[in-house]
Amino acid sequence: MNNPVKGRAPKIRTKAPRWLRQDEIAAFVDAAVGIAANRHRTSPLVVDYVLLMIATGMRPGEALGLTWSRVDLDRGMVYFDDDDQKSGVPGSIPLNSTAVDILKARRAYCDTRCPRTAWVFCHSTGERILSLKKAIETAARRAKLQRVVPHTFRHTFGAQMTQAGVDIRELKDLMRHADIRTTMIYAHLARESGRKLINRMDAVLKGIRPPEALRQNLDSEQG
Image 1 (tube, rainbow, N blue to C red):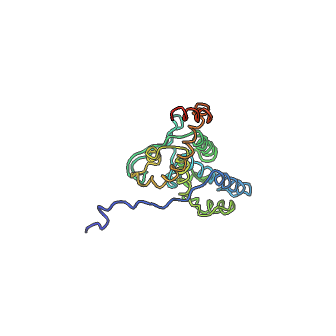
Image 2 (cartoon, rainbow, N blue to C red):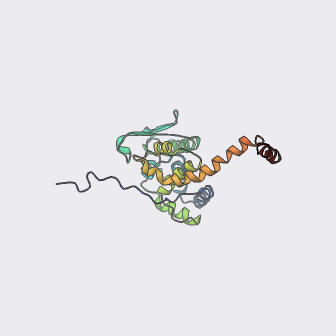
Image 3 (cartoon, rainbow, N blue to C red):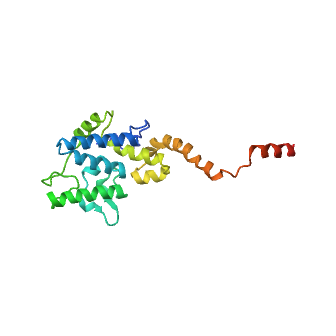
């Protein structure tokens, strides 16, 4: 039987995704912490889960399915086999200090509650947590944030990195996209950040340009 989709190019998203500004990230975390204070057990997990995705660009399934065998805190890396990734090829993610701190906190939790568990995100019994979608919806609702789903936090990584001036080709590698066209959904943010970055040259050239009065004199002499 012929495969009707064989040979077709993958569908590339063109619409700009929903992502969170810095103040929205803070509002979400505050809401999740507030829920935790009311003894909703999953809320500390939600904060760690969300911040890990924002810090590294992990996909929701990659983060929830993360095992300790993939984590190398000494080298600051997370490794994925070909069957772990959407692209079907092996990959790795460098960890920044935020991600390392989160994973160390999860390791301490596991060592105390369930030292034999294979999962980074687990219940106190050591069983893998399959979904935190409802907890995310609850925190987003309390923070008055709309259209927030687990994948929003991966998009937040892409958008924030682009605005920080990261080259779109480097971002493709960090997000492990198979096709750069997928990464291009953040390109409009690069143009916006480019306007801000170019203004840095004002500081470099400040005081070097001739005063306007001198410029007028030079212009008159040349005339």
